[in-house]
Length: 266
Length: 283
Image 1 (cartoon, rainbow over the protein chains, first blue to last red):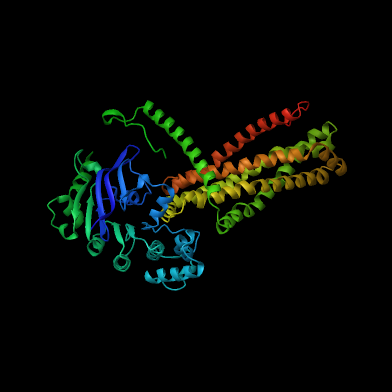
Image 2 (spheres, rainbow over the protein chains, first blue to last red; image 1 turned 60 degrees about the horizontal axis):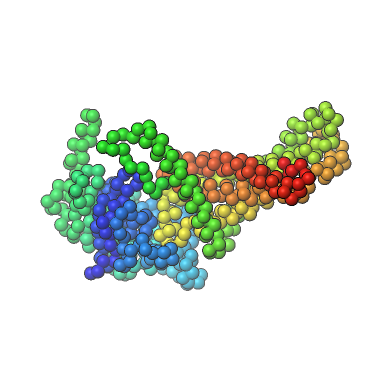
């Protein structure tokens, strides 16, 4: 399968801190790629680089073979409309109703008239399993799980080719987490969208991933070590020869406990 | 906020005071450049694409209509306090009837525009900065970009238009209420003859004086909008970051108001003297 997204030799630095170093990752069209790793290893930064919300310090980001750095504003906007992004805390617009949140994308870009928009919003909200009447509420009136689902409905309203999910199950109870996982699978099946899921929830990984990339924080790597510890199917994670991969997947503190003890002694 | 940074100190050593001073200087210059770029982008989006009425009207209401009571109260009390403070000095010199000219010229040229703008920097500027800062830290601004909408066009332009167009109208409101407040205190409490009060006001306060005050308020409105929106957009994470952005929005807007008041006054005076060289100047 050809790659729809290519991150080539990416380095990302914020002031004195380097978060990503010489990273190369390709996302194949139609697959669901899960990116896992410890907090602070650059997973969310990677997601934002894919859609051009951040520009890399070095390296190339390509979408559909086009280098994002060469796109003018209009071309960048057109490119972004091919993406849907579910943010970690949903990032719903507080001052707008749920209806206006979901309708935002199609309305801003004049993709349809108001009558058609009503149908689109109703369909998207139904797809994500939200009850009738929710469209008149404001985001603050909804639970965390409901807000995530509205965020997903808003992202899907533009019929994206690629869906980006930033820790979609963080902060949710186990049942709601599974609902979100099912919605990710449903989106993949019905919309045939390529998916990139940043998560540390292994249940999500095993349920939705076709392929997994595991990143490791640069601060704990040597100068020539690769930041990618694993790139392959989810089945290869559990008995991977690298301790760091096995410990992450099994949720074992291991080496980190020794580090914590050493820091306390200091 | 700076897109580039100074190189790290060599050999992993901790930054020296010189390095810290250099870093702060670098940040200040980068900030000034950032504000200039932000302003240029705002003006560019102002003309490139029309803003929807559905986005403009709520901003006009929040910034303009909702500010009327507080600006009216501010203006009224400015006039009243001026009358109370100035009356005894003028009465001692037998010039009590001239109070009207002094109160009203001070109001329309300086106190009305500056104090109304200061009040609005506190009320409107801090609110805009806090709102945009909260949107920044909750990724709503990123969400706008991800949905193919330019955040400056959608968030900053309507606020800029509301401040630029409505702050002058609010200044007129402050002037009007100040004139009324000053007149009521002067004629009803201080028992200044009302005919003489208004006659001297008319002699010394002209249309050009009123225009000078309103002219300045356009610049004040623009400064409040740009500074407050910029602070909000660049808010750091957390409640502390948003709070700091709101405080900075007011403080920097206030400093900008004072600076603009001074420079526009100098410029206005120079223009006035150039057109009417025989006059003593507008100041």
